[in-house]
Length: 258
Image 1: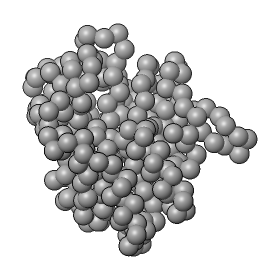
Image 2 (image 1 turned 45 degrees about the horizontal axis):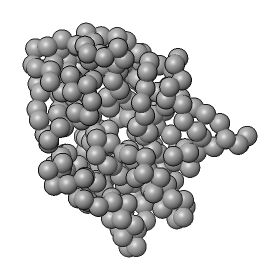
Image 3 (image 1 turned 90 degrees about the horizontal axis):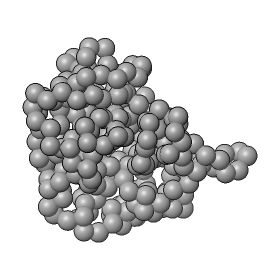
Image 4 (image 1 turned 120 degrees about the vertical axis):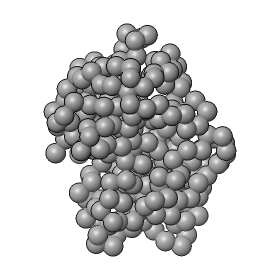
């Protein structure tokens, strides 16, 4: 089970530029922290009042080392990406509800076909899923989308656990649609920009394929108090609202209003 939320002073162990404007950082957390795919951190930037939500891309329980991948897209993310080994920074987490890892691993063991679908920085939590199933000797196929060739990253990690289809300069859902002409997945796990998730939702709804989506959203507090990240969902009573930070970021694909 994920550990309770805590605000920790963490140490930067390494910083690696893996693509233009995309940086991987390894952070050393205090003992006792446990994180799962789909969860995120609220990281203090030092230059903005609000912290920035950053997905967890990997976790080593033995060393309490957390891997994050940051896209330099503004003042806050730029400051985080400019950190250096040895720097200290405050990070609150683990936050949010993760992907259903027991369901994923049990399904793969039972021979079910599960696909990972990601776009841009949304590939980060999917790498965490891929690494988790690989450590159990399981295979999972991935579809990854990038703006251009310079923006490509993470394929090597995804390839360690199964086949990867990369879409460069196009729509990852086009590759997915073509793949479904020969084989349908039993479920899909996805994270990426809303247009991609909206197209994926339509494709899966047409074919009756269930799945989970991790929504990317601007956040204030990260713990559900400020309501900045509210999103629409379908419930038995009709349309309702949920907080991405507290009720998500992972939602049932059929319930999320994307």
